[in-house]
Amino acid sequence: MNSQTEIYKQQIEGMAKGQITIDPRRTLLLVVDMVNDGCRDEGSFKKMMNADISMFQAIEPNIIALMRACKTAGIPRVCVQSIYDFAYLSEAMRQRFEAMGIQDGQIAPKGQWGSKIIDSLMDEKPEYIMIKSHYSAFAKNRSLMYKVGLDTKFEEYLQLPVEYDKETQTNKKRILKEYFQDAEIGPLCTDRLISLDRFMCQRNTLIITGGSTHVCEDAAVSAASERGYHVIEPIDAVASEDVDKHYAYLHNHGIFKSELITTANLIESLKRF
Image (tube, one colour):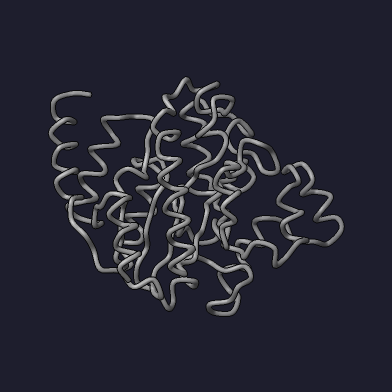
């Protein structure tokens, strides 16, 4: 950690000391990309990219505690699952992956262990899962939400590797690209496939946790801020594989885009309501 990062860290801790007022009826918890490839020693982040995933593992208990508190408060909990097979990425994003030396199927492939949300979070039974094939949870035609257990056929399809898409299309069934489009045009505020923008139609606040602070979590924070939502970031429930970038981005979020707080103080705020 360099000296500037240490300064950012101290300022972040200062920004996060207070309490907040929050209305659970208008709030959503978004847990970004806590998947096996990024959080487990056997995953591609550590095994293939030699990334430091210790921060992801350290925030896991805080996210679990927050999920439990949100459940008690009646706040919907959405766990984000990235699927990064090249077949689902935009051309620009695929080119960026290739420029980084990432090959098709190396990170978060559909229907395989690496893309699955870590078991400890799924054990908390989140109400919703978000699938995205982009950095941003708000990406148009690259993201969707669904209520767990409502559409078993769709959930079964998500367990199939991308290689089965040709067979799926042969049987005149939808593949992920078409499901993404369905989420954009479906009924407003439905429990079935829906985009995050449409789900937020009756809400104004997002609690955003997970990672990476400088990539996908930042994309969610930035998109939510641009849309005028109140963004709350628990500083000990977000993570990155790069410590310096983590604190630089979190510091920037706290000034321009989000309200910073500790997980403990956020849970206390929820209990007060």
